Length: 143
Image 1 (cartoon, rainbow, N blue to C red):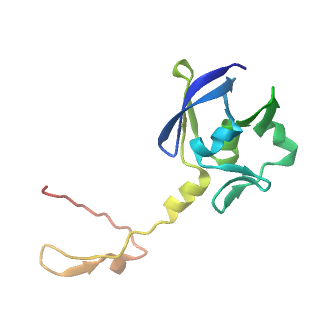
Image 2: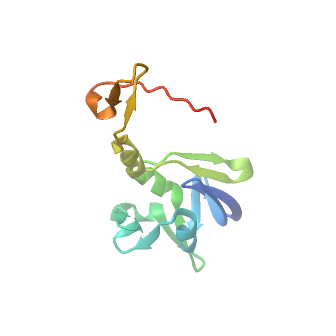
């Protein structure tokens, strides 16, 4: 595997870094993991704040590689571990990483804030009045 300059889009932020690519796998220097993905390697796994993903000991070679005095991390293997979609443009050495499973759960659990608005006849309705029912909201703005 040769080192090439790659563009990595992670959490919707594009970063250029030297990387290694081999059969659809993106390897970053472990020192570039934090600047690119905002994760860091710790004894308990790959962590961001209080969220840690333990690396399966039997599969450690899928994630970590030490070669010629450099330490590499397989970001695509990590994406598979976290349920993250990956898109790759080999011609431009560009990689896009979608939302992780923990991010999708956060989005799925969000609730709209309660609000009260008048209908066309002036009668007030609150969103909470319709809890448990399907609601279709139509909005517009004049600006």
